[in-house]
Every structure is written in C-alpha cells, then in structure tokens.
Image (cartoon, rainbow, N blue to C red; front, top):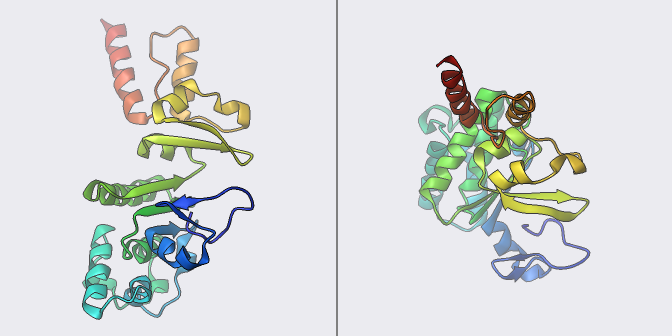
Length: 233
C-alpha cells in the first residue's frame, strides 16, 4: 500500500496515484504509514526523540515543527516527553518501545495508518492500552483511515467496523464486522471466529434461549445477564 512491494499483476492506487510510478512513491510513503509486526525492531536512533523525529526530518520540516510533532505523537500514545525523550529507546519496556515505534509513523501525519499485527506478543492489558490510544487518534482525526492487519479475531471483533477477509490472494469477503462474524463461513477457509461467538453458539445449540449472533465480550455479558435474569424469574 505504500510502494514497498510492487504488484506483479494489476495496479494499486493510493489517492488515485499508481504505486508503480517511481516519481510518486516518496509522496505515497508519506501518506501511508506502515507499522510492521514487532515494530520495536524498527528502532535504531540514540534517543527516543531522535527516533520519532527521523520521519518528519526526512519530510524536510523545520526544527520547530519537528519538535511539535514529536511531542504531539508521544502525548497521543501516552508517553511522557519530559521523562523519556532523551532516553535510549532500548532502555524502555517492550510496550513502551512499541509505542515509540508507532510515534515514529504518526509523527508524519499519514492519511492512512497500516498496522500489521500491532499487538503480537502483548498481553490482553497491553493490547487494550495500545488499541485505546490508536482509536483515540482515529476519533480526533475523522480523515484518518486505519487498516488493521490481524489474525486475532478478538481484536478484529472489538476494534473495527469493516472487515476484508483475504484468501489465497483474493478478497473472500468484504462486509461489516457483524455480517463477517454472523453471516460468513470463515471456518471454510481455516479462519477462526471469536471465542465468545463459539461460546454463545454452543449455548444456543444446547437449547438455551440466547442470541448467537454475538461477537464481543461486552455484548455477551449483556446477553447473559438478560438470560440469567429471565431464568431466575
């Protein structure tokens, strides 16, 4: 999506610009920010501040604007500028390193933010924290598009509103999150469904009076409360 790989067949257009055109790839890469799986492996500078500033500096921005973007991006993901800006990124915890790597991308103000398995290796608390910060960015900038690449159906169910399922290089399904998990045969292509969906379906199959078109823990809790209240009446 940002021209790192060029399609062997067909075309990829970003804002109407073909990624095959060498003259425009630089502009495309500023528009599409890519956060790789285990993004902490992207860190390389002496300090957190220098690492985050690397992208904006390559964009040709002046020092004042770079400083402003570094501070803004750190605040956006819950990192304290005064405390860690001058620290080596390699002194930080794994979760902090991952957020620094995300800062390096969002400091360039991309129009599209691609997150490739962003929460791989993080515990549930760490996943919720980093996704909460990413969603806050989305809420503050309605023009920002976030593309989440993930095999975690729980993350997909909880955080996205449109799901594109790929299978063998083809689009298998392009639907809302609800339709994806309730009306699409994901198991036929070896893709799982959220654990909570399996649980609700199992209850339904045992004859219990519950909805089985549920794919988030929050909705399941609400439905089970209704079920238990009705059962105890």
